[in-house]
Image 1 (spheres, rainbow, N blue to C red):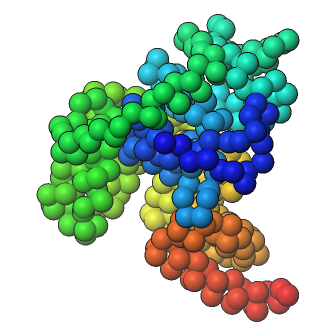
Image 2 (tube, rainbow, N blue to C red):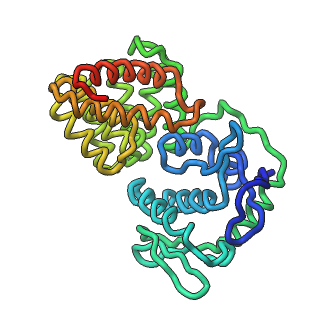
Length: 333
């Protein structure tokens, strides 16, 4: 059942707000929980609410998930779907009409949201997307009353995305050192299988590239990141990995250009600020390095403690030490 946040401010179309767990949303839309978690981790669709230690989806998040699922199933690229979702996030909070009265549809190349008296454009499309928001609310209320049905975790992957998720699981089992290890070989095979089934799955190229880079195949990694950006030219993960690869191979100038391009589209990208600071340090631009390390630290400070893993915490501690040294050297208060 959805969680009722009695203390949350009322939204336009109801006096209380129902909030939904990842499991609730997975059951409602028949999407694997692992896919929703991956979407949240990559910033594609994140749960908007938090109660204590729990992250929860609100009803506007459900609209985004439904739009994303239908557009992706119709073959639109992640880049175009992301733009539609960004437009919806901007527009929906300003709609005066109760959400239940809205209809979301696709008209030619544009996602359109109809209010009671007029319509406004979201963005992207080329497929038929037509649903009343009230019907989604009713479906959520109905489906989430069903009992939970356990599914076999070890079922063989079917479609490309399932193979991609299997690759993620196998990669997590790898020790990060031996590219001959079974987990590495099987993870690589799972990503390659995903790409056999869907040659345009940009996320699989990105993860395969990161795996190859960790295993020492830098040329193969670069090719994968290039392919990821071919299919999703604004994917921040591939942009960040290409810049990191340039830094790793002793080309800080190319890394700087890559990280700056990434920050133009994602100005708060934590890894970009950290990588850019490292690149600037290698070129001797200490003032720029200090600025980006400070932005890196501020970004971490805004994260919830559970989102700061040990690796990120270690880099935070290292960055704090470097910032202190740079401030002293540059005589910055």
